[in-house]
Length: 336
Image (cartoon, rainbow, N blue to C red; front, side):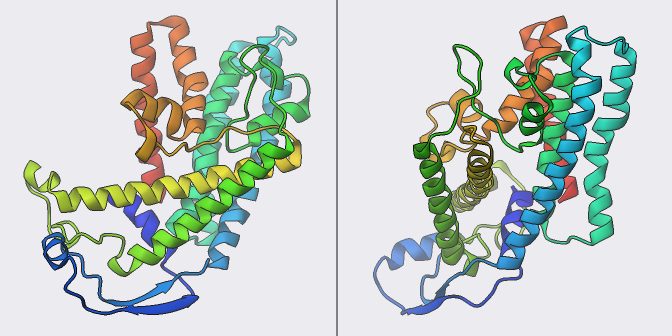
């Protein structure tokens, strides 16, 4: 949770002047609750404006990712996919050497090289740079193992759009074809992106004075948590909930903005990556499988679960997907 909090805090590290400021005077209303929770509401507040340099940097590294994805998609389309269609004499061993020995290491090492060359310091910009690379690595595995959706293999352009898109395209469950985006879909994505951005600005305005830890828990006071009781303290859990809400909104903004761009530029409908899992999930499986970061769920299914399931049981395949998820999350934490 601390690493996620550092991502959120880094957004406000180079913030511009607030659009509007207002004072909240000291009041006796709810004194008992605020004294118990550790929240102090009196003081000067401001409505934060978007930091344009930050959003420009995120967009720039995302463009770099997409260009890299387009290059890799061409290599996979002409040298790996035909192997699955029995249209080339390229051996399985050469395909695996190309994938596991060249493409996948490049996906994981290129962000380090770019960060070292450009001196990127902002954790969120680093996160934005690295996430598509992880998706590209898993999509390389699905290409080698033959689990690419058939609808995207009809032409190099179709596969390039699918591979380089840092989100999931929507496919019809009946015929497996891609779903075309209507004007209503584009309008819905635009509204969703705008709502998410406004929500982030409001949450930043509310919680940035507290460094995004409004409840004065031991962790917020930079004291170590030494027992289970400390972790289950309501103040600590309140800070964790706020951090989870902020992170959900940030990942949701990345997904909705990307989906909007894909729908406008290609005409294909993209899957909503975040479906308000923190507030609307009805079970752990609903949270992780259908609401939280659907793009990652899709690549783990085709890039880990299905290849392992071909040679083993469902339990082993699920376990390997769980391990892969943990490893790439540790990679993201290390990189950011």
